[in-house]
Amino acid sequence: MDAPSLPDLDNVLHQPVRTRIAAFLAARGEATFKELKKELDITDGNLDAHLKKLLASDYLVSTKQPATKGRPQTLFRLTPAGREAFEEYIETLKRVLSPIFNIHEDQ
Amino acid sequence: MDAPSLPDLDNVLHQPVRTRIAAFLAARGEATFKELKKELDITDGNLDAHLKKLLASDYLVSTKQPATKGRPQTLFRLTPAGREAFEEYIETLKRVLSPIFNIHEDQ
DNA sequence: GGTTAAACTCTGAATTACAGAGTAAATATA
DNA sequence: TATATTTACTCTGTAATTCAGAGTTTAACC
Image 1 (tube, chains in turn red, green, blue, purple):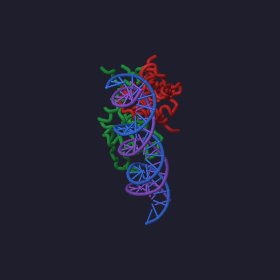
Image 2: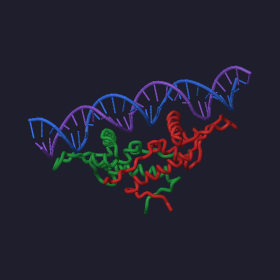
Image 3: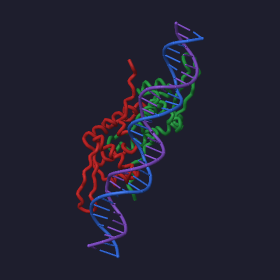
Image 4: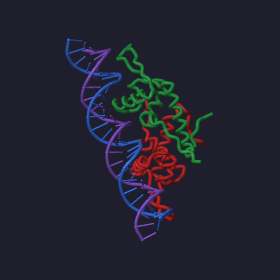
């Protein structure tokens, strides 16, 4: 029998910009384009591309807010599938990294 | 003042194949091409490309073993810089993820 | 000495990542 | 009320990355 191989990491989530988007939204619930841009400190085009990728994977939804004041803004938030994928991704990460760094969750 | 933005993740290490290579070598010390291929379950060309990227970043060194039996093999191992970068990468990951998942090290 | 096999390496195509220019809708200004 | 400006994205083109499979080299086996 084979030694178990290292599990693969979700290639939508395991990317520098997208991991941070997912983490931010998981912690924050929802955010605007502007807030994400500030938090991540990347260009508009780059953020747009990564949001589109997450939307296409059904990990994110966007909802256009009617303008109460200022321009209408789009809110981005994780879908249940997105949150689940993110949690699973963290589990995989821990399996990959724990042999070395002893990472685990509390409780 | 600005809210602190999410720190950027090392884009050499934060990639599905390369994270696993680094983790495997950090745990294992060194490995052959063949061992890595088996552990990661990827094609030769793909593994080669990722090893080259890690070598180019000076995160890895390869040493050709003279053939005692069988063909000479190349051993891959992390450089001190590679190990340090990997540890820093893990720290950054924890900063990005801990607000949600309560990940930390023992001790 | 020729064939097979192992251990890589190279090439080219597809996909991804990115910056900056472009667009549309709201607000501010004249 | 026109027009200029700003905001909030979106589009386009380019560069870089990722990947599979074909190719190469060296050793072992017959």
